[in-house]
Image 1 (cartoon, one colour):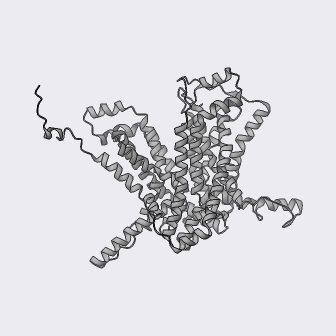
Image 2 (image 1 turned 30 degrees about the vertical axis):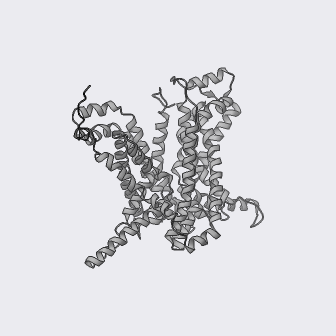
Image 3 (image 1 turned 180 degrees about the horizontal axis):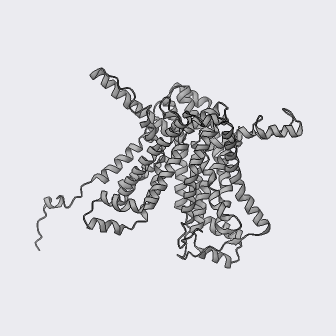
Length: 563
């Protein structure tokens, strides 16, 4: 039997081989640029140790590791003890004020950790109003009584737990709301009461979400600088600052950042491993209204205390104290300088938010359009920045940008006798780039969730009419998902307003933001003067918090009204 000759030209014709287009090439390139700070930090791990690094290893490295581990362990226990019970109560129980607690329990998320640390220090220190009033009532003097020391490692654990528990609460509540009512009804028919149903059924089903929330809280703990620096606790973040600015050794600071990143990678691996090993599944698609437990008597009183305390301690008391201080110091906010700080912060946050959402939109749509292994991997790498502390990202941005500036300046001097100075490092370009690297994941997750709700058939219909991908994204997808885009913009906007360590390292000379100003004044023990800047940051974070709560309330399948 004769066969037709095979034409090599036909096999390798343009119709047979699909050439890469702008989407499949551009997305890995964007991801590589965004991953540059992380790659720079990793590269410094293999650089031979300097004298400064040897000194750090022999003297303070053990303190950095020990304090960071203790801080993470304490905050982990704290956020779990607060976040899980409150999420269970507002999701599965019925009691007066439940709808108010649903969103109010997220309010501490708007309070940066360093601000709550300053506030409680001002209230509870020896010269603060609490101890002053106590001495007036009792007639005691110095050394006559014992009072908890706020500026301590346990104090930092409490401060961070009060503002980071919403991560666990947020994801735990979403997991509880998404659980099928059938499994809960079956547990009841088998004689399981509310406690047994929570422990044996609901908690295992929500475990992946709880671990994810815990991982986010621990990453934020590891990234914190303002709280530990103000309390005088040596951790990796304070060590990086001291090595960079105090000892003047960027290489040793990068090596410290490299070790710090191993902690972050361990958290990421544990979180992924926990989700992979989870084998709890819903057995039904039935999602009717949840059978809430009606609380009465002592159970009602306990629920009210459990839900009220985190709000009072994590938001109401600090906010009231900040407002009181701000009213006492009108000279700090009734002046043009304060308006300049507001303008710097708002404009910088707006630019970073728009760029981060635009990049997220390109990456998410490219992943939808070209779902190949390189593209999916590139998008995942680009979204890792949120897991990296701002201090590490700032160091990773400064080193290559400074090299680029020096290279360009040297070439211009040799070729034209002109000094270009700082083009990237020491300018807003480096600062905005670090924000995009740090907070891209926040916008990327929101945009991907919005795109997932659009049926692929809409893309196919538009493409069949000859509409190119760029117009499909601009004319069809963006109008449909404008709610998701607005949410992503607000989330990145508030995160940039609160970001402190990256801003401290990368900001240009004579350029301040609200976060930096609040930190500088509090570091000089001018706590009342720092209140107006801190209060402005807190107020800006309330709107996204309420939007997040409304989104979660409407997330339960089969419900058009908040659960």
